[in-house]
Each structure stands twice: as C-alpha cells, then as structure tokens.
Image (tube, rainbow, N blue to C red; front, side):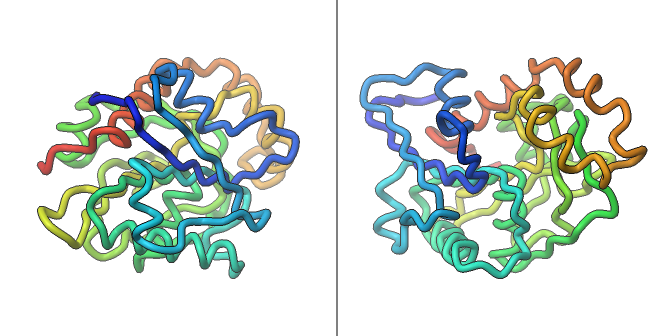
Length: 253
C-alpha cells in the first residue's frame, strides 16, 4: 500500500450531518487501517462555509482528498458547489494529489469536468452488484464484481471528456470513473464511485430510508430488511482499495 507515515488527507464532508460525532469517511478509513505515525485527516464542511483549497499549491499540501456523499444535488446552483467544482478542476490539472469522489462526489467530478448528471425516476437505496468494465479497474482494484451499498436519487448520465468508465450496475451504467491528469505521464488523479463503501447499513436505515421511501419503488417496502442483511465484506475490501489509491495511486494500465 505504500508508507503512510506523514501522509496528509483532506475529507470534504458534503453530507454535513449536524449531529454526527465525527466524519464518516475519515472514521471508516482509519477503521480499515489504524492511523500510523504522522498520518492525519483534516475534515472540512463546505456547506457551512469552511475553507476549501483555492489554489493548486494548497491542493498539493495533501496526499489525497475525498469528497463524500451529500443530500444536495450536483446540479444545484450553490456557491459552495461552485467552489468545490473549481477545486476538482484544479486537481485534474496537477499530478501529485489524488482525489476519491463518493456518490455526490462521483457526480460532481463528472459535472465539473464537462459530463452530465440526471435525476432518476426512483431513488436507489439497496445493495447493488458492481461489475468491472475496464482493465484499469481489474488491474488496480479487482477482477471480481463487488456488492456495495447504494443511496442516490441522481446518477452520472454522461462521463466527462477523457474520463474512463470503470464499472457499471443494473441501476447505473456509470458506477465508477477514472480521470487522468493533463500533465506528465497522465496518471490517474481521480477515482470515483457511485456506491458507498464507507457507509454502514444501519445509518442508511436510520437516517435515509424514511426520508426517501416515497421516492422508491413500492415505497421502499422490504428495504429495511434488505439493508440490514447486507454483508459488508466487499465494502471493507473496497475501502482498502480506496486507501491504497489515496496513498500510492495506480499503475497506468
């Protein structure tokens, strides 16, 4: 995975659950692999006006940046989304700092770089099997499909120019993308996932299901049982892959 000593990561918490004790993504990353000496996670909540990196130099202070999920749409015209979109474009212009985008983060990367995000007819809240489409995925993540939790009312309908679609599912043709830097050897600087490998199923039941049930097929009937029966083995595997990418990057397949 590479040496984590001294690694510095930024988690952009776009979810912003006000009563959350800590950041879900930073907590999940450190739960998979305990913090090593000098490894730090900073958390910024842009919805409350907290500062995002505004220059390439600020971005390069971090080894990796994560953009979390959000109840906000990537299509919403909000100042903090505009600032986050500009940060994404700056990350794509350099070749040091790597970005992982999850759900909303996945969609905003697509939107910021020239792709499209559309609202779905129904809200997806269920385990979904993610099927690899690309050698870049099979060489750097896994040759097998992964069963992961999904929670989204929007999805990427068009990948941005130059992005590579890595995986799909029955409910989203673009489940994952890779974006290469425009500099140097054009290494992958952004990896995005529609799924939520960081999210525990009981949180989706407790915090999301009641809010979106009327937008789901059959008004979410049976969703609670399906979610709570979810086996998180593949999610743990995927979180290890996320951390590996943030620390060491990928080979340029």
